[in-house]
Length: 606
Image (cartoon, rainbow, N blue to C red; front, side, top):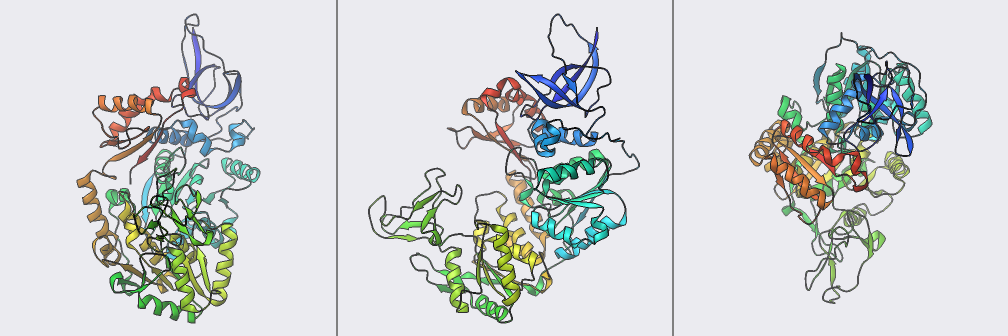
């Protein structure tokens, strides 16, 4: 006999749907309540089809009840989630938990909406690498005003989204909403208004890419090369990639913008770099800089006379200057002067950072604190000294330069009560100017007030990180400091380096076209993204062996640098290999393995 069977996805880690008996008329996108184990769960129908069924051979449970009378989510959004789940090696249910409000996943009633496709739309891909930021934001505003397309505008950071939203005229804001983490009840009301088509555009951070506009016409992703767009927590979705998938499914325009393109975009389209910093960028040789001795630290801190002079000139006029040293703490590590022993974190194995403000040694990764020992734990020598000076040491030098601590501020990612602390700093800088010493996070000040001077005290450490894209991260950060925030074209940027203007730094003067052409050729020779896909897999050791066997069977290259752990890497040179591997690994993500846990997979592609 013919029966209706529904494939249903639940908010769960499984890669496959669960199949239930249903009734005629059930459609994709409707929520249903289904039996699972000893209870019931809310799921979303993925597919419903009628077929013959032998009830004597197989027992299939029935859908308990149907929540929605019609599909409650645009089909293009569900299709986008399905395609993204396959690409990012996760189940659609994992993305449900990111994409939809808790109320929706619990079955809260929503109004009926007719999600008809507008076939008059034509998908297009455009780029906007306009600098400085203020000019690019103006372009986004004009784009919103020129037509009535439902739009999503995405920024990598909350504050940047807020600033753009605040810059919009009142009448334009009446048509849209600011979509940020906050009150769950208010967000649920806004989400339902968006779903019903009452709101025409949204400005927000990455999660806004999932908003259920009934007839989505445009997605704008600003600062598209920002690493923040790769989710730090599982599922490891890349927001820009999902925006690309969704624009295809919805037939919407996709605009990728920013100061600096990603490797994948440059490989695809080779956009032109039309701006140069010219005299605003000054490069200084660290070897010729003045060396400031730091008490208790082996190496001095180099700060050029030019930085000291320019800083005094700016602060004397009540201007703002940033001193950036991406080496937090008083010293990056402590070392025994007798046996060269460095205290390490027992959890992470990383050298412990010396933070004088806390009189402690801090792990840079897990943040666990230890008392600073007075003698070496290995040889007993009393001479434990700092290795290389950090931002706290630069803070002391800045205070000496101005002769007062009132105009000196410290800003980095570890500051407590972040929002209120930054407001206080900005308020003081507006009144009397001063110096902000800290990590790269200090660039946030540029979004709040005009900053006349940015000084990178040791740019070489940005390139020294053990990442295949370290050069990109370094040059992007420096390039951003030239163009970000308010009145950027009036800002001077000074960078100190042991090899100023050489290697990857040439792109700062000549433009990012030069950087990417050289960088992409080297990555191609070394078989690195964007030419291939790198899969980082982390699971249990017993599961690892079986998953690697599947990769070997398919002839796909793998790397196993930590054989005693559950972590390994896959090198997929073609997209079809990603699909082959996913099919082979489906059994490891079956509902029957819930008690064993599931591996977590991250796809590196930039």
